[in-house]
Length: 239
Ligand SMILES: *Cc1c(COP(=O)(O)O)cnc(C)c1O
Image (cartoon, rainbow, N blue to C red; front, side, top):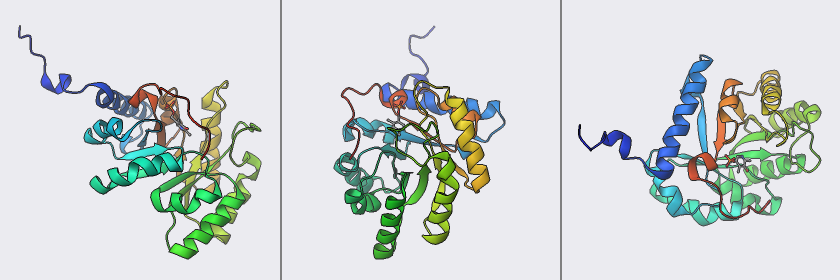
């Protein structure tokens, strides 16, 4: 027997190999409930990782990335986007209105639309530039006081205000379940809310639970450490 293994299996290492594994896991979870895996967008969460660490994942074919801080994304993605114009960048962390101009110019999708003041500011910026990123409304499904997001009871009115009065391009809902709870309950709540509000996009599921989210209808899963490895330094919470 040859000592040389199938090159198709040995050529992938590190983050590229983990990316392939995540893609397979998504495909399997989709197949299990009869969904088409192409309906599911993998958002590779690259926060805290450098452009050099992101590059092998791009080379492996990944194009959709998520970052949680405007300034950090500014330091990495304009250069990457210049080389790979088809990169799609998602903001998945809280957005301060003083960073909104920068964010609206850099991000293709803002998944953290979490308050009326931000909706107003996005509409104003859209009126000024004629451009608005695609938007997801972040819902605080666990009703956690320290967590960003619209409360479930307020979601319908907020989405209506964003879409009908402000004319914002709201495509879906996003949630981050409380760490101590069964995420499936929160994913199901978000799915039902999306159906009621006529929003097709559902961004839910992270490294620890994305197969469950796919089973409950996620159209976007946000996966960081399962692709890039564990984050080496603590994440700042905002900005
Ligand atoms: C960091 C982060 C993720 C990815 O988390 P992992 O557990 O590393 O997959 C997903 N969503 C949001 C909002 C995040 O901040």
